[in-house]
Image: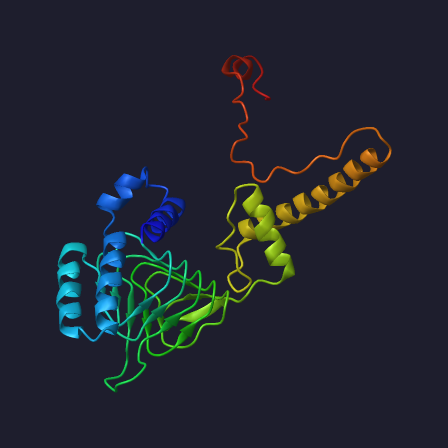
Amino acid sequence: MFDQLREDIGSIYDRDPAARTGFEILTTYPGLHAVLAHRLTHTLWVHDLKLLARVLSNVARLFTGIEIHPGAQIGRRLFIDHGMGVVIGETAVVGDDCTLYHGVTLGGTSWQPGKRHPTLGRDVVVGAGAKVLGPIEIGDGARIGSNAVVVKTVPAGATVVGVPGRIIERERDADQRRRADTAARIGFDAYGATVDAPDPVANAINRMLDHIHHMDGRMEAMSRALEANGIMPHFDHDADLDTVVIDSPNPELLKSNPSH
């Protein structure tokens, strides 16, 4: 239990730049409190103590503003950011490493018994105010935009926006994945760049990423050649550039030479 709690706190710390300490997360994050309460109520639910489970889930809702039905199946490392107004229905299934923002509803569209709520795969992000309705499946790695209303199955890796939800970015091809990898390494997220929503700035950045990738390849070949000839050992690329700082120019130098 404590290992899972540490895992939950660590996942929130990794995904929320506002989080400062584990103690702060444990004491002030209603999303974590709601998930912890759900683990208790879900255990009661599956052991046929359904009334007690419902009572405790309602108490948790009063304190957190998050309503998770005891029958819902929640995976590991779920992060509910802010959380107010989140509703997760009885037959909903949420995979590991998912992120839900405030106002999200995983709801049903039918009064008939049986499966009537959505199933989210792994690493799904659902933006603030989005509604995912019905017994549909949201594929691994999918992204649901803020205030979208999704009533149809979403393939893995797709991005969905609008009312009704429409797919604007399908699973990335090899070029897009390569650009994403290069962007992540240099600390840039080109998440918003899509083929269906052309953006001249995004297009220029993609060209820069392609050029950086090409330069990386040539530098790699040069490094291998230098090592093969005994001139210098091979060097590895930096995993990321977060720690690299470029010194600001000297203000006095700029005054004396404005061309800089």
